Amino acid sequence: MGFLPMLWRVDARPNRVTAWTLSWFLFAVGVSMYFYTARNRHVLNPEDKVVPSLHQITQGLTDSLTKADSDDDASTGFFNSMLWTDTVASAKRFGWAMLLLVPAVLLGLHMAMFPVVGQFFLRFILFFDKIIALSVLPILFIAFGIDELSKIMLIVIGVTPTIILDTFNLSKSVPPEQIVKGFTLGAHDFGVSYAIVLKQIMPRILNSIRLNLKAVMLFLFAGEMIASQNGLAFRIALLRRHMGMNIIIPYVLWVALLLFLVDLSMRLLNRKLHPWFREA
Amino acid sequence: MVSRGLTVSELIRLDKICVEYAAKKVLHDLDLSIARGEFVAVCGQTGCGKSTMLRLILGAEQPKSGRVLIEGRELCRPDRHRGYVPQKYSLFPDRTVLDNITFGPEMEEFGLLGRIRPGYYRRRRELRAEAIRQMKHMGLQESDAGKYPDQLSGGMQQRVAIAQALIMKPKILLMDEAFSALDPGTRTDMQRLVRSVWAETGTTILFVTHNIAEAIFLGTRVVVLGKETPEGSSKVVLDMEVPDSIRSSSGYPTRDVLDRLTGAIENAAVGGKLEFEMAEFGG
Image 1 (spheres, one colour):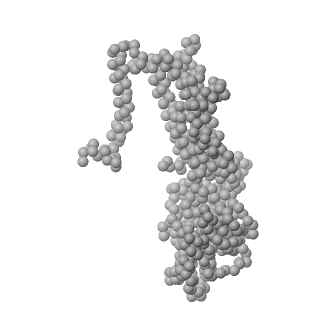
Image 2: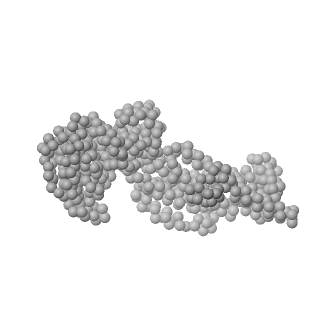
Image 3: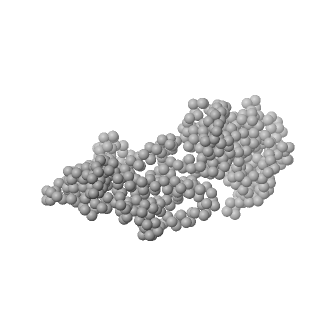
């Protein structure tokens, strides 16, 4: 049987070179197509801003890495740069949102472990989970103003119900034998909840948060794009008005890289903290 | 049914226990008394309520009516006086062998915030040394201490589970089909281990199994649960002492005795007449 037909079998085992080639192929096609289009457009209009050339992108990236975010501000250097200040502003909001996931995890755990807490919150959280966070954005701006709080609340409303329900379901999936065993080994209710159940589900919770990182960023970007004075999404929205694609494209790639790095560090942290955990 | 009178030093008493699941009676008017130091093997067919009975004694389940008394007191939830070794999920997968064994004493002495209590690390070292001794006693190597449960064979996992339960020095050890998933060779080793643990510690053991031969192998007393009708509730159809005289020098009944007893008990469990006398076996 030939090489290509062999690859189409469900039990195909592509060698290292084939696997590497396959996994990078679409990247290569995407980059090639982009620069092919950019070159064609620049032949017709050397000042084209819609599909900036490599030179324009490099120029935009250099500006965002060296120049301050305001024309009035003459300060230079990376730590005064537009990209850095925007990244710090977005990172702060992101950090607050991640911090607020801790009470969400604890609530989910207590709902699963203590039936009274479960009865009290479950129906409400299930209802809350069905509310489209972006649809309450106007309410948030009216209730909390257009400052930081409303943006963080948007992330909280968008993501916490999912994390609460995920934690609830994960806690419920711990075999009852383990809980009974905990009691027979002298643990009390909180001992069983924290030392047995939470400890066992922690790697899965971290995975659940990892899967929700994009949702966190989505709500963060929505808030920043609508009402903000800084942040990565604010800059992208601002530059859209000026057709600043030479900066927007590096920003988009920067956000993707940041998210990838957060995801990677959470994965490595998970592996380090929970060496016993085997992903299904 | 071979009836059995009240024992001198009663530890567990099930008093007119009724259990129903979705209006289906599982146990009805079940009475049972277990004395301190007995090794009671409970057997019966699948679905006859053996594990339900164990969970009642454990306190993990409550009867619809009747009382479960441990040392004359009604208990409503599992506690450190009743050790538990289930068939599956017997160990905490997130802890090493050593941490599994020391979990109970550490939790009992220090609670959740152990690390910040004075003397924690000194006491922890002592507990770990005790756990290593317990491990060796269960036939495990010291080199296994740092392994996680999924790195152990089924038999080794159950050895750790027994060590984990015994380090708490429970009054009662409840084992629910603890060896059912093991291969025959390992199973025999584990049976020998549990018998020797019982002989050494004198802990009251309630061992649930669907294997009658295993029940006779292990128990000083065999309780067989059976249903009156296929749809009906279960009751104790046989409650008998297993006399030491039927055991060979190795401590186990001979194959011939075992086969005859097993056949007779199987017949009784499905409602037949119990057609043997213990005297036949020298009892």
